Length: 336
Image (cartoon, rainbow, N blue to C red; front, side, top):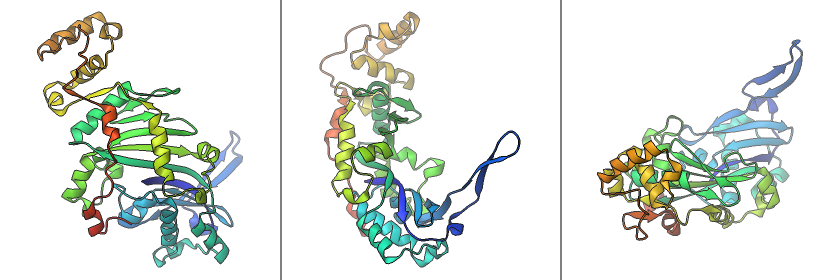
């Protein structure tokens, strides 16, 4: 599904209405170097927000999550970015947002409806359902510690999110628990959307997101929205995922996770993947962990078994189809 989008709408407007303050810079002598208008936050469905900024008399910069702006959440959404952006722009023209002062002429409106304008960033994601949030967290922890992008190296595991190519100017990936995200302060679901079905859907969701930045969009000629079709987002995400090397990486099954202390899970995982722990750990740490692992019937001084009945290959999770939009979401008007 389409997540975060940034770009420029060709649209006449009153620049004074798209300002929420100014940022100024002064040199050491107190002379003003530059001044910049701050982006204006615009509230959408269920208090979700996007940002607008006047770029020139006929150009408006936008950045934010149009799916969340329209439906109040982004647990699920659409891959049809052209239709999504039409709905998004039309919402900005409604009486609710009359104070924005947007007044596109017929030619500009047609350009926007047809997708003839520039994008500078597009985030695409899909969700895969595991049995519960603990398995989702185990998958993310395993991939963050052991997987890598071909020709670009290992990722970064921070908190409960695994990043690959986080600082790239072109594209990158991140893997995270949607269940954890909607419990975080800045991403909480609106109270009226916190139904048992929504929470269960989120808790089971392993979310994998590709962020495509301006350089990569231009390289692929996708910086113009009209060059996208409904299959483009899925193709882009799968291409990015294909560069993630995790064919020999495993995650523990839930019953194993329940028995092992947290500090030993990564040790066990590393051993299962065939790494020589003696080369990785200090002598004292190795023998201390070995002693503790023996209590669970595991000897990390031996080679890991070829038949791994108590683990799940990470790649197997992604071989399944993404979970998609549940029927009850349509019945309850939770999809824009």
